[in-house]
Structure formats: C-alpha cells, structure tokens
Image (tube, rainbow, N blue to C red):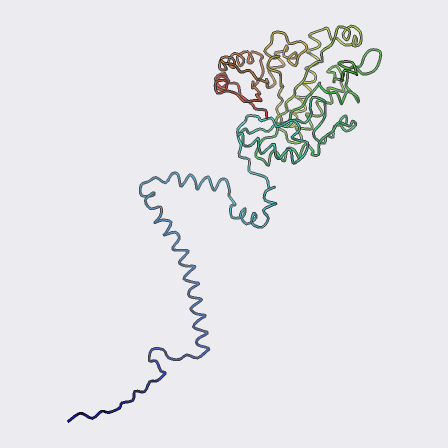
Length: 395
C-alpha cells in the first residue's frame, strides 16, 4: 500500500535571529561610533607604524653600522634648512615672493669673479650676472661702479658726482650690495681712479697754464680730460667714493687706472709746466696720495683695498707712464693687495705662468693675485697654485 502524500507548507518569516532590527537613532549612533573609531585607529596607527616601518626599512644599515651617510645627510639637511616646514608653507602661499627672499650665503670661496662692466646699472642686469657668477663657484662678486670714462653705475651721494651728469645707474650702492649678498656672495667694487673724463669738467682735472682744461689729444681726435693726482679735489673725490662704497657694505674695493696720461714734451715744458711732471719721485708721490685717500676711505668701514695693474706693465723693467708707475715705492706697495691682468698662453703655459708669478711677487704687494678673462689652462693653473698666487676670473 502506497504511503499517503501530505502537503507540508513551510512558512518563512522576515526575522533574522542574528540581525535584530535596529531603530533609526541606533543606526545613526552606530555609524558615528564607527567613523570615530576609524579616525582614532588611523592617527594611532600612523604615529606608531611609521617609526616601526622606518626602523624595519633601515634595520640592515644600522645593524651593519654603516649609518654615517644617513646621519650626514640628515645633518646637512638640518643645517641648510632649519625651518624647512615654514619655508615650504611660505613657498606654497606665495611662490613669487619666496623667489626674492635672501638666499643663505653658501659660497665661501674667497676668489673674485668680475661681472660684466655694466652689470650694476639695473636690477635685471645685476640679477642675471650674479646667477652666472654663482655657478662659477667663486665667492666674491665684483661690480664696476666707475668705468674708464668716469661714469658711475650707481646713485652716488658724493658732491662732485651729484653736481655732474655722469651717473648712469638705477640702484644705490646699498641696494647693489644687498643683491650680491642675497645671491650668497661677497660684494666687491671696481673703480677707475684717475682715468676719468667726466669729473674733471667740474673739478680735479689738469689745467693748462694759460687757463682751461687740458686734453690728452686734440678735440677733433677725441681728446679727453683726466683727473690729476696733484689736485686736492681729485684726491678727495676718489677717497669719497671709496668711503661711500665701503659704508654701503662692499668688502673689497679695486682701484685701476691710477696713472698719468701720455704727456708730450710740449705738455711738460709748456701747457703743464706748473706741474713737476719731469720729476719721477714727485710723480710717484702724487699717485700715492690718490691711493692713500682711496685706502683710507675703504678701510674706514672695514673694506680691503686692491690695486689692479696690467700684467705686462707691472712686470716690465720701465713703468713710467703706465699704470704700474706707482710700484716704484715698494714700501707703500707692501701695504696693499695686488691684482695683475694675465692673458698669456702658448705651448709652455706652465713655465710662462710660473715665470710671471715669480716676477709678480717681486713687486712687493701685500697679497698677489692674477685676473684672467678667457680661461686658463690646467698647466697655468697649476703653476700659479704652486707659486701661491690666487687666480680671479673676469666674465
């Protein structure tokens, strides 16, 4: 007999033993607690986990004892940027202003790099020139502030300069110093002393016996005036400029063209017969009056004075009528630093440079250096290094 089939109906309920239905308020509270717990775990996990991860990553290095490079990098980083987090924040807020903030002086090399002659005329030209100078690795940036014509590339307050129309610069001496310092370099100034055809029209030039200003050639040939070392006005003008520049912050002042123009026999016996131009001792004495004024002005505010010479003149046997004429007074020369322009080359660059250095050292300067413009061979560099003569560079 077959079993009887029975239809059994299974009832399903929307009730879960493991998930009890919650009220809306409890659901909201649960979400808030979950989010808060996640935040706490994130903060604690980062604070604890990061040091552990750093340790694990660097464990091999510390175990082996080779942690000097890491320590050194950390030390260098802290030295170069003690407020790195603040600097980053400032940079993010205003990147344009941070670019103009002063750089930390990092170039400690004492060698000089002479910028292009008109570099100081404007902030734009100065900034560009300083960028190239810093790449050279030289630590002292030299700007020309009075050129061979007597034009001043800065806003001078010296009375003679303010009286004439020969200032061609948009910046003050202090501003120029500030630009150089912010570039991480030491500021130095270069001026032409007696070779100047601007200031003599106001004061300090050669005056012919019959009256009027003396020119170094006929007017139609481009004759120009010069400052005279026999003039108190000229000497005062040179000293005033050096004092002004040292006060502005320049640490070195280079004087070039401390010399006489080429006088003819007619000049010495006729037009300028009132001056002792035929007396060698008095000529040298007068030149040193200009140097002494420049030196006093420079040292008044802690700047060093340098005299720049043409290398061929300072090593020549006859120096009268050249920029090395004042080297006849060895005693005076021993108190100033010397820069000699050098451009010799040739096959035997080492010996040529060594001979030049040895002869240059006989001049008797306090400190001897050479200035090169178109680079220097490795052999010449070696020779100057062995002779103890520092090499400066002109752009």
